[in-house]
Length: 413
Length: 84
Image (cartoon, rainbow over all chains, first blue to last red; front, top):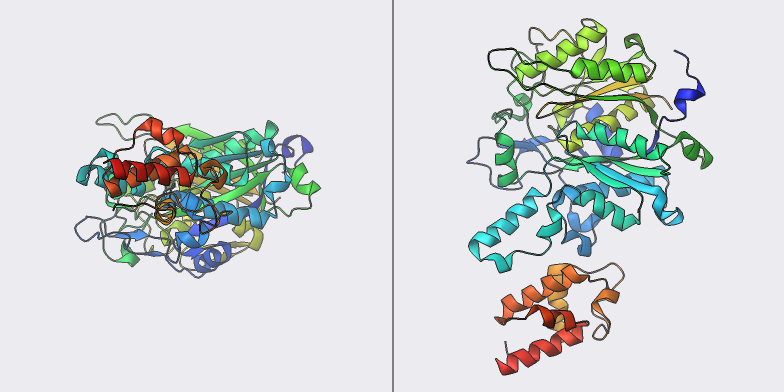
């Protein structure tokens, strides 16, 4: 379809990417691992998980907090913020932006978070039990807080424009990018957006178990198999991605080379399940609304990044939404998160980053591990090896626990 | 402990509140205010809590308000240690 300037001027472009993922620290390492089908899922090492039902996770290995985070900030923040601050630094460098040269009130920060600083919180609660309230550190007052990563990025880089956090579980990574668009349209020049999460401590893991959606298998190769006949839930992970969003005009004026543009976005919410009735999903409406906003038809979409929960009923629901819009097996679908686990607030942000890299390089990254598609999942899942071909328009889906749906359309810049 | 000195203070500052990128804790920091050193009110509260735990003394809130510099904190603690 043709674009007129009328609906491209308000499309933010992404000019910087920062990645802290279980299968790669930094964009290059992550993208190489993802195209190679190299997984970051393995036994949990951050604590002794032997007696817990879930013993595998996607951990960001080779990340030494002291290497990336000044000690004054490190003591006040949870591991999740350390990963977020690091990804934000990487994204700014990648975008070629030096925040000290820009007006402080024209730089904004909006990140997604789903669990807050659980590992930090657990440590302080242990002190409360074992030693008493006077031993609980003062930084507990800020480190757990959902907006802590946003706040610390804002303080560190002197970004005093509108700052916020969105907590819609896995959907958050897409929701914040749409919010970044809103901020850019209201006068912000640069927005740091995206998300990370890191909840791999006993307290964080037990909270996640309450959904009943986690895989309890011990074999990393067969523990997270979305859309497979053998699907058994998902493996949790930590990390995510930060992105730099700008208006096309600003990016152009400073000679930046955008990875892609946000052409469409929509969010919907699912109704509360009623006893005795099949659950209803409004994911399809999020997809069609996002496509409509992007002025694209289903035939224009080259790849769908699926939410891929790995829980059979949810997989069927998602596959049904995709096939209703596109037709059975009519569009390539992928879920590289099979190599990282689900990163919650970081997951959809990482999918956005991955889709931008797919657009840049003209290649669809694979879904690993899946052998046989489950009945009702009539999708063209890109398995095992990457698939070449131009990626001009990508649709990214995310569903957050509790009924959140979000869909984003990214296009070539 | 019967005496508390600036090196104890340095150890507590770096241990519980970290070290700002622009500060050399080993330098002559005794009479520079915590604010100028990059330690905000939360950091000072955290340091005070750590001193109380280590030395088993109690430091009231209004005394914390008066500890503007590392040397002032050291002097206050030593006065408490001799009167305790």
